[in-house]
Length: 119
View 1 (tube, rainbow, N blue to C red):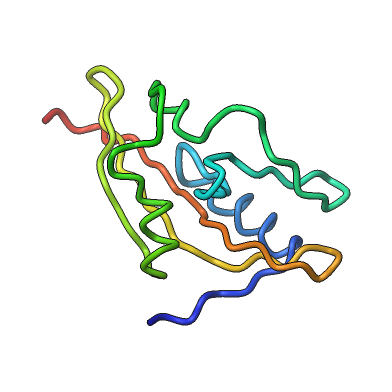
View 2: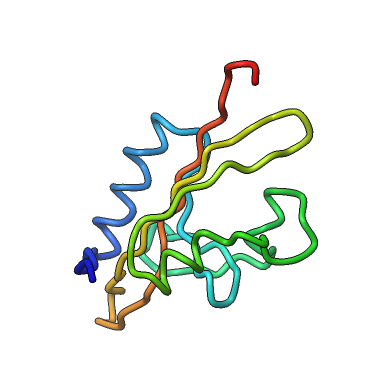
C-alpha cells in the first residue's frame, strides 16, 4: 500500500492554486459524503452543498467513482468522463489533510482536463 501524503491546510490550498493554473478543474473531494471541500481564506474547511457528481450532470454517484476508488485502494485513479460531446480526463489522488485543529481528513484531490482532440 502506498503511504498517503499528509498536507496541512496551507499546503493543500497552495497545491490547488498551483495546479489550477494548468488544469480545467481542480477540487478537493470527500468521496464518502460525495461533496467538494473548499478552504476559506481563514483556513477553514467548508463542505459545499451540491454533490461532487453534479459537475458531470449526474443525479447520483458516478458508476466509476474514482475518488471513492482512490480512497478505498489508497492509490491514484484515472478515468474519462463525458458531458455531451466533450471528453474530460479525470485523475483522483487520495491524501490526508491535517486541519488547523490537528484533525485528519481522508480526502482526494481531483484534477480534470478537457481533451481537445477530436475522437
